[in-house]
Structures are given as C-alpha cells and as structure tokens.
Amino acid sequence: LILAALINSSPLLNEVECLLATAKKYIGIREQGGNNRGPVVDVIIKSGGGTPGQAWCSYMMMFLWKQCNVPHKGTNGMAMSWAKKERLVPARKAVRATDIFTVYNRALGRIGHVGMVYRVFPEETFFTSFEGNVNMRGDRESVGSGAKCLMREYKVVNGIYRWTK
Image 1 (cartoon, one colour):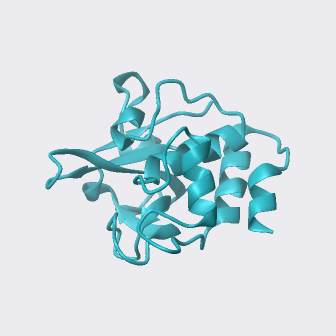
Image 2: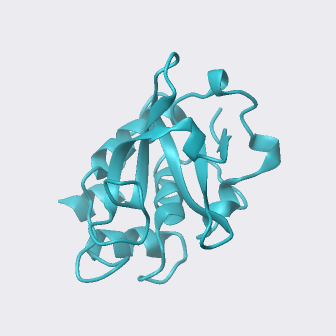
C-alpha cells in the first residue's frame, strides 16, 4: 500500500496543498533493516538519484516536490542545496507552511539537515515541521529515524527558504 502511494499522488488545487497532503501520507515511515535503509526509504532515496544508505532528509524533500510537480532546480542529496540566498524568507513573521528550513550541524561544520515547515503558529517561537531521517529528539542519523512531524524552535534553524509560489 505504501509503495503504491509513492507512485500515485492525487492532484490538488495548488503546490502548498499538495505538499502538505503528500507529506501527511508519509508521516510514520521508518527506517528498516539498517541506518538510512528500508523499502520506502530506499525508493525515496533512489527517486532523487541517490544510493540507498545515504542520509535522506534532502531526498525526502526532493521526493515531495517531485510528487507535486514543484520545481526544485539545484537541489540534491545534500541538505545545504536547499539553502539558496535568493529564496531566503526575510523575517520570521513571513514564514508559511511548505517553506524549507535548514539546520547547521556543528560536528559536520556545515548545514546537515533539512525539513519543511508544516504548520506555523504566528505568535509562538516554534513551528511544526515535517522531516525525513529524523528521530523524535530532532536528531538525524540515529536509531528510530523516520518521517515525522516535530515541534521545532526557530532558534534551532539557521535559515528558512521559500520554494513554492
């Protein structure tokens, strides 16, 4: 059933609605049989031109964008490929659902994770995210990684970018 859903995306009114609805279908996908592996995870990685076993947060975003026919030129398996200066959202109050956020990874010395803003709470210091390759603490590359919605504080992200109309 899940693999069938990977192939069939339902047409929706616009990019934002499609991305949110498609992300919702994948909440709960988990790695199986090893780090960055599993039947669905492998399909997601391969759809972006990657090799199963690679970190897949960026591949998850690419997969969603492809399912909804949303252009994402210049992105690849690296989270930092989504951080384009010309797409930077200038202020927190302008953030909306389906914007992309990046997280700097001190150990890597670079942007090491990417996810999508799923829901905005305008008066709060946090938002709900949709992410692939993440555990419930918000860490990447760990046991129990999957596709989840988390509560993320704005202070944890190093940039938010608009990839939809």
